Length: 475
Image (cartoon, rainbow, N blue to C red; front, side):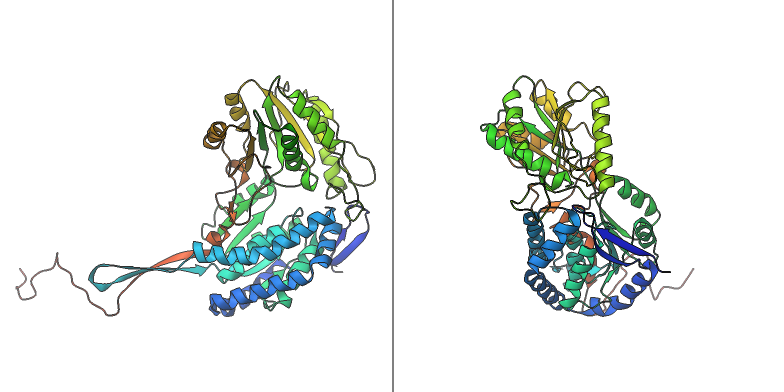
């Protein structure tokens, strides 16, 4: 009997999708067979096909957003912004491909030319996450297809319905079925896909644990591209902020959007000790007003549930671990409905904890850390193995300059949320947050590789040194 994968709605527990688990080897073989023809098409042909894809998604905005909201638990208003990002990714990727992988020709000696062009890798595997189940894998798929690769996409086992809907939109737009394959399954299918000899690379967005496992798996395959977009333990520093209400709003947006299920969410709030009380009071006022509800509720909530009961259980356990380490709750992580994965926004003071957790708590938990001066704030911001996103809220541009110069992070913002990463710029982190393969605008870099050619229209050659005279007798 064929194994099935079932997707349930976090807010209600109702089944919303089911389908058979796929075969990684068969999907890779199909993508391999389709690759020569797709790669042989002109870039213009591939771009026009993907423009049609954008139009297909645009026409299904409400249907797509409703599915994302139901399957992830995120509010409907937020799901609509994700669909918008899927559409916008096409034009951004076209521009990126043009800028990042141009053909260049240089004049060389003796009438020769040096030409640089780019080729696709071949078959690329894409492993998608559940928090942005359309936008984030789409951010790999679109650049890969423009470059001439074929793709095998395995969505998260927690959001297969969204993955299937996305792939169907590509096929409806004219992307051949062999060019983009859907692999349904869980971790076993993901491992099998990553281990297929027939893939030429893997593009991954997800946890640092899974990313490290993939890094080890690919250690003996230097011929395969591996792009890892991992998590963060992201700091937001507040120092002499001019407007406490605005600062509190930015902090709440950074920490609690998507119920904290963003890799760029703020996990640590770093403030000046003794000057923090008013700011914390403003943050608590906002926390107490946050609506946590069903994604389709009216009025619309700020937060829905986290992805499933297991995620909620883990977050509650980790919050208890923070308290056991000396944390003092300011707002507790509450579970309003024990049978469903709804969580309330939490704020906990970890200043006096001698041994803080350095991990990504993927949910609505913000840790407060009070420090004595700005140098200590920078040290605390860097007190992590991760390095994805960081923000400083200050009226002093010199403090921002110091922060930017000294904080280790791939995204550094000034008076903006930590999760304000634009798609028309590179996105990636350092340390445990990635492997120096930034995505978003720079995804074109890992979707194709440069080929350098020295070219001449005729064969002319001479060896000027090291040869005997052609007419001299040998000795």
